[in-house]
Image (cartoon, rainbow, N blue to C red):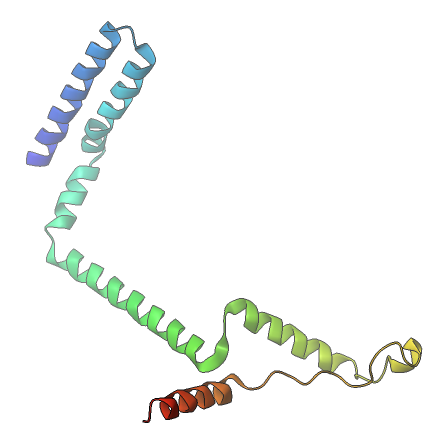
Length: 148
């Protein structure tokens, strides 16, 4: 009941400001102000304000928001753990999966005779080292540097 009264007062005040603005021959601004001032009364008439008021004072609704927040925290925690395990970003995982699919489909030496000799090195570059091993060696070096 209070929310409806406040919304009606805000709409009436906005329409009054729109009339004053129109009196000053700023018609475009007056119409825009009138449009904004009609929104609160429209929300009251559609029942949105009553629904929001019921939701705001409902313990069940707040418990629901708490559950949604908990779900979001759990989701973000699992994403962080997945990234720390070396999964990388989504793009990196997809690129690695595509690369693994391509290298298995065709043998590396199958196309070598058609290229001719000397045009391409016979050996492939070594794959990058495992991220976990490098990380631990860096950490060990830092700890030794600080005497720990």
